[in-house]
Image 1 (cartoon, rainbow, N blue to C red):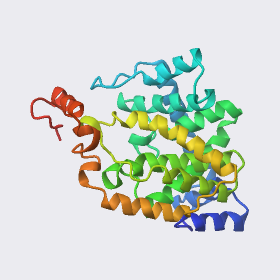
Image 2 (cartoon, one colour; image 1 turned 135 degrees about the horizontal axis):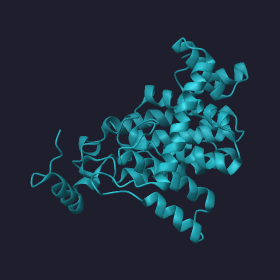
Image 3 (cartoon, rainbow, N blue to C red; image 1 turned 90 degrees about the vertical axis):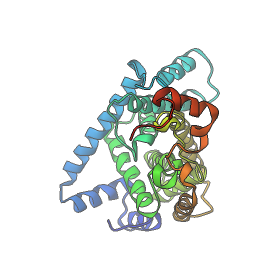
Image 4 (cartoon, rainbow, N blue to C red; image 1 turned 45 degrees about the horizontal axis):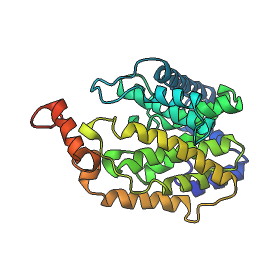
Length: 297
């Protein structure tokens, strides 16, 4: 890749008069040695899997094997169809879709890790709901996935996308930033505005710990996907309104690295702290794994 940070990404886009998505398609083709049509077709397949996961989460049984989660996406969808949502229909739809995909993951269904399985609902939730709202063709959303990929590439190479390394800020936070930046560009924003939305999104996620109850990607992971989708919409609106990330987005990514590096191990996907070690969290562990309350390796 010809860019290693978001500032360089903006410079390249402006120099070559390309969107982030268009530039990433070129870069991916060159790096992989494949044609642009090939990498686009491959991404299109991924998007179809995302859409299928949304559908499955809303229409089929998503009860997890642990029995702890399942059906919340359907509950949200039923709620906003029969009630006035505080979020409004559009944001509530993104919320429901994000929950749906995350529940499909928890019930051993097929998803695309974007950037991880623990944060797999955010980008589909934002993309599929926005596609329905604005009437976009699949081709446009596929291009948006390349935008999200470029942002994720920078984050992964300058900080973390793994909860085990940097806490949930690395998984949920990165996915929110990727979704926000892509949505901003899809809605006509400039590369600079897209990057500002990344910084705005990540700042709201700094310090978020990874504390999966019973060591499973269910509680609180699934609901965090729902909240993350709504945060991505918010960050995109802010950026398009002209709000800038006063701390440059690359510096925010550096802070995420600093915070994650200094985060106690018990708050990095070990289930040894946070919600996992509440009285209820420990009770669930014992119910699932016996008196020792330890998840088998």
